[in-house]
Amino acid sequence: MTIFEIGALLLGLSAAFGFINHKVLKLPHTIGLVIIALLASGVAIAADLVFPQVGISATVTNTLNTIDFDETLLKGMLSFLLFAGAVHVDLEELAQRKWAIGMMATLGVVASTFMIGTAMWLIMSLLGQPIAFIWALVFGALITPTDPVAVLGLLKTVKIPPLLKAKIAGESLFNDGVGVVVFTIMVALAMTGTGDAGHGGEMGVLAIGKLFLLEAGGGAVLGIVGGMVAFWAMRQIDEHNIEVLITLALVMVIYAIAIRLHLSGPIAVVIAGLFIGNHGAKFAMSSNTRKHVFQFWELIDEILNSVLFLLVGLEVLVISRDISYLPVALLAIPVALLARNISVAIPIKLLSIREKFERGSISILTWGGLRGGISVALALSLPDVPEKPGILAATYAVVVFSIIVQGLTMKKLVERFKFFG
Image 1: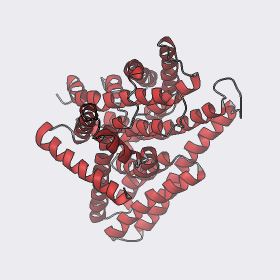
Image 2 (image 1 turned 60 degrees about the vertical axis):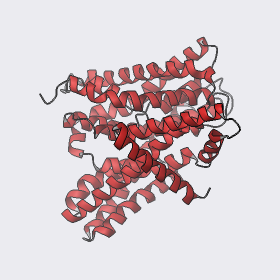
Image 3 (image 1 turned 180 degrees about the vertical axis):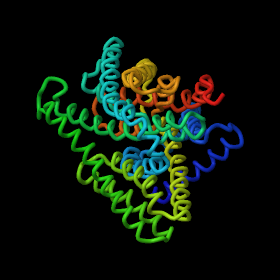
Image 4 (image 1 turned 120 degrees about the vertical axis):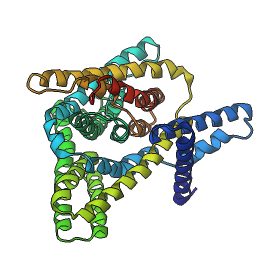
């Protein structure tokens, strides 16, 4: 299939499934898309069992295999989705929770990576499916970051205090960038053999620290510089069409530069989005331009969100159906939730000595920390090693549980705390 035909298929299915969800299921749009896509995948698998000669599942799988999920998301859709999310975040509210966000997006990500990795290493050993410790850490790194696309979509459906909302949104935007960096480092360690017995090209603690600072810090600097250039250009004119084009160019150019220089593209576009959505909106845009810029990015966000969550639901046909990994996959769900709870609770407990946090912050941050397409994309991007099928199964279980169960029950959890009387 050509790129145009694949695009037509995905948008057509997104529109059709979205229509069915709106008329029949009446669930939040993205969650409804995942559920319908999962049902469609289940029907295709069942049809294969009843009519194996037709090969429906194989046909759909072959079509999906022509879409490089991790390339499409990590080097395509992600830049636009993160910028669209960051543009709508209030920087002043974000700044009021900067320490909590900073700790959860850095120390919290690293701590959760090791907690999940250690637990899964022990579980898989006990279940007779042993995995090298470094590959267990790779799973921890890819499943730890909350998905900003899923989280920001969820925040549209629940009503919570502004500062708590800023904390959830800010952490999900930044821990994604940090998580991708940690994942990259862990995979590099796994592939050199350093994580097992120290064979091959060694990567010391100092080298890891430098790589982390270079990718994360370099991405932040790139985002600031790119945002300032775009801000300057937008201040010189008052033509909304060109200014929308400038924001679009900003996203694509800085993400392309980040990939070329091995910097964190996600962090770069988040910083640029926060800068343009706040400082840029106040001092470089007229009210007419603000209206068009924000409407444009809302539309981009809605379209790409629809396609992404459709793909998440359909990817069950591509991911291994080996039921031997089912116990591992199911146990990964409580492991990921427990690690999330601990990595959220520690920073909040420490900071609560000098800051006041909304009641229920730990519970809401834990349950609202949805995993999504980014984790799936990272798992699919792994090289073909023996550990990959188990990692894929566990990843998909956590992501599907997160989007459907946590996503659908989040509103009830928030209502329990009666924030607005």
